[in-house]
Image (cartoon, rainbow over all chains, first blue to last red; front, top):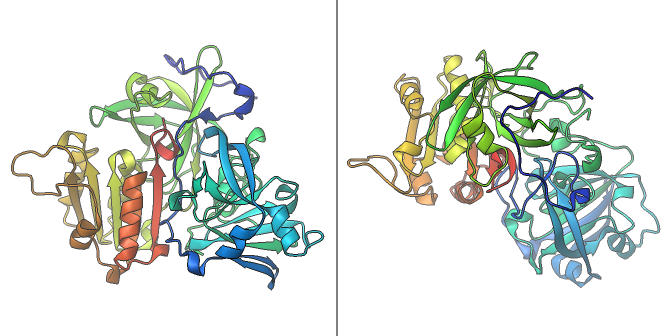
Amino acid sequence: MQDSPISRGFRGRRPPARNDRVPPGQHLTEDFPVLSAGPTPAAKLGSWSFALQDGGSLLAKWSWQEFEALPQTEVTVDIHCVTTWSKLDTHWRGVTIDTLFEAAGLDEPPEAFAMIHCDGGYTTNVPVEDLIDGKAMIATHYEGKPLAPEHGGPARLLVPHLYFWKSAKWARRLRFLEADEPGFWESLGYHIYGDPWREQRYAGD
Amino acid sequence: MPETDERGGGGPRLLWRTAQVREAIDETPRVRSLVLDVPGWTPHRPGQHVDVRLTAEDGYQAQRSYSIASPPEARHLVITVERIDDGEVSPYLASEARAGDRFEIRGPIGGYFVWTEALGGPLFLIAGGSGIAPLMAMLRHRAARASKVPALLLNSARSVEDIIYREELERLASRDDGLEVVHTLTRRRPAGWTGGTRRIDRDMLAELGIPATERPRVYICGPTPLVEEAAKSLVALGHDASLIKTERFGPTGATHGS
């Protein structure tokens, strides 16, 4: 590791306890900053749907009403944004990817990789093994309330063990892929996988 | 898929480089620009940002992201930092740092919120507070290239004293090269003020903005409420959502974080 130059006069605020929950290069925030590349899409629940797709073929599709009727799961997790803020103990409710696969009648995922497609054209890629066994959900509620549009409402992916750009807002479709492909930010210099504990912020990290 | 000004996903690892402060320029009472020497720096594109890492004597480190305010044509890299009073990194950069001080910098980062002359126009820039920094990189680049692409900057500030780059913007707008600059002041206005007198809203965008029919490339940067309002209003006014690019920051988050 290279020697970092000392920044004269910099002392810093020392991190509080629970530092073992804050990955390298991150700091805690009490706020919930908003980051998006474009306008917040207007949510129309009447025409909303969430679909599972394998290549070009549709495996399953749920309307908002059908989606809300699926078994719901609540989680409390820490989230880590690549812009260096982390937030502890956030509460979410939604439908786990395991539940979606089960409801679609999938005994096992047909492929090893997935692309999440969103309103507004945003995409992000996640290996399927990072989505199953309770590791991810399509979240519809945050802190007991319906997810606000600027935070990805009505529904976003929540995959909290990866940097938060992977928890794509306004999620509408999960498409299985035979091989990993970069999504939106992953094509623009950000890391293909994005593990905050290995500080995989940018391509090549 | 929104249009992207892509740079491939691969490429070598972004290295931390040592930056040395050449000069600190007070832009407003709360905002300072730091002119930096960064040996080995890879040229950036207007709109991109950097990660800054400070190291204390005992090895403690803190890292945040800041937009680049200088154009690629400039000899030195400039970041513009607003002091967040309870922040950790911004008080150091915006108050303490002086010529000769050193810290680390990594980048350039981000390939989406980018405008280069080759993309053409019209160019419609909407700024709130220190959100003007990446937009200034675009205007400086436009001027450095002697571009005549029609451009409008709509800039929201609290008062005249809070307008960042005020004199330089006046100079740029007086070149008669197709750039118009409109300030709107949300708190205090001097006598005889002829610019905007409230926060940016739909009516203001309809009245002063570049019409949707001209299909401007829109870049919005500022606090989240301003960005949400402006982006939503422009979509309602008929602008193509895929031509609207946003960069937001909250009190402690993101590109201009604490």
